[in-house]
Length: 325
Image (cartoon, rainbow, N blue to C red; front, side, top):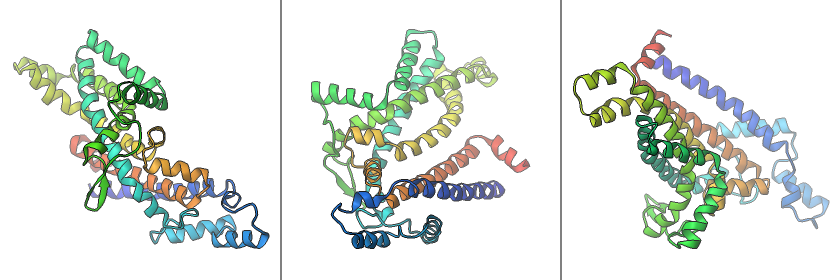
């Protein structure tokens, strides 16, 4: 287990180093923030002073090594626009995105797994075919279009839910959350549903495939031969075994929901990290974009690490194979 842990840590450090090079060069080699941030009426001396203040007068390789040196001390740069710590600025938007992603994940699991198991146990029934048709629509329809249709139906026509914004918040440990108030919760529902639609379709397909495969295994046949009830066979013997791929995929998808909820946050004017990223790209606020991408890399690495550990817990064969390796 220790060898497995050290091997994963080494791989993670390599990924961080490679992504730091790619992200920094990819962001800093494109465009010039001076053209956007400085007034067209500024004279040459003012422009040179601004360039020097932002550190853009140095060659790209020198800027990169300054970035690496600061990053090793926990400093990923200061925003050109807000003149504040880029990581602090991003983290101030994190609670809004996190609570939205977590609610979407809950929707995906508690709706997708039961529906996928029904479709797997009764593949030729009307319910099974309807569920699979719905999952195809969830995959096929563009995310922004789904969001606009949700706004049209539930906010404009039925007037049940608000169309955008975060609503009232309440603080927990000094952090504002929307799910602690009814108004905030009502503002969360539509963007969370929009964010969950694709993931729910994915979970349905995973659960269906896993259920169909597990239903044919010998241990399920043996459980039936022992006279166990169908509910016990499904809940104890099948559900537990189909959760390994579901946990793996959802772990990765949770990272994508947090990091790339850009479309949903833009459609519903949700003040999270995705909206900050779009604003920063438009303004060429390079430190914020780089810090956002590097934090995303860290987050995916941590989530993958947790998923690997869960794999070991759920499947003893993983521990045995790693021990032999």
